[in-house]
Image (tube, rainbow, N blue to C red; front, top):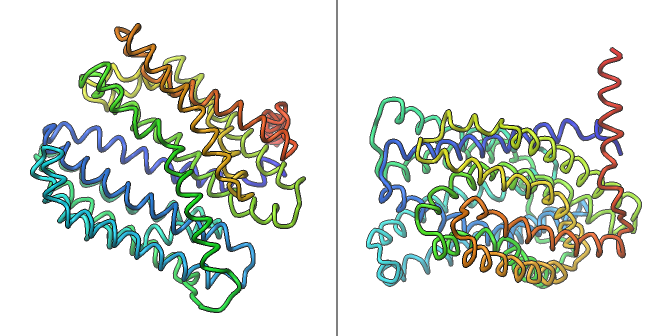
Length: 434
């Protein structure tokens, strides 16, 4: 297993995640043609939509990767996954609509009622797109995934930049309609690119109850793992105030490129991990996970060094002036990116049917995360650039626990984290010899 063997998929994965970065930049730049209230209402809408679809993705669609090791089972797994996906999203959307007035009163935001009414149409567009994305991950059609997200994020980003260039004010309803258009076009693209894989059947040996049992465990883990990402804004608000939240949010948006790169590799290695474990091919499993971690570690270390040397200062070209102070926070977050590749072991552990192990490790790491925030918030609250430090500590503790487990159960050695280096050097040698 060599770096060059997977260079094509990795390249398209990086290209795919660059579409997230493009949209992240657009959402930061959009502040130039809207106000904090309008943008806040849209953020509420977008966050609610993402929360619903991501929960359904974990509960319903992860089964597409977990139970498709046997080719003949794919049509039945597709049917189960799509059924669960549609039902779960519809339930969440219906509950939001029914209780929209109560939630609006609780949040102190009357416009939440309008947010709830706008949600069903976007959910309708997103249901097939999320399903198609999982199909593309299973079949390793990363170029097609890139095209889908290019249409989805590219459409929205293009319209937003057009409005910025022409100084067109955008209300939250305008931004929601832009999202509708991007989601609609992205969904059509996804369906066209995956239609030949849309095979459904009641025939097969995969038991519905087995899928549900796995989905419940996986979903619990899927919710616990991003806890620091869900909670950090509220903790920062409590200790540091709104202005610091306003600085941290742009840094976090740009850092999303790293998160999405890790998510992509997780999806790429999940299905092969299931097959290797089912075939008890531990040598191939070890090669897959250690090479993946090593490649990501090498890449993120290089990018982090560049950022610390000042390359990230170029963000000031597109960040509004009041957000330039977010760059040091981003640099601090990039240090966390060096530890993130080790969390790819989460995928291997999940593939082995042990998501409760990850839940336990994450909860232990979360305690350290909370203590770090408490210490920084109480004793060092004048140093706002330390805000990302608890996340680094969280990943450090989690990495130690994962490496320990990987050594015991998958024969993973620490030195293997650097095994991509010879491949990379060999690639450079071959290029220069030509």
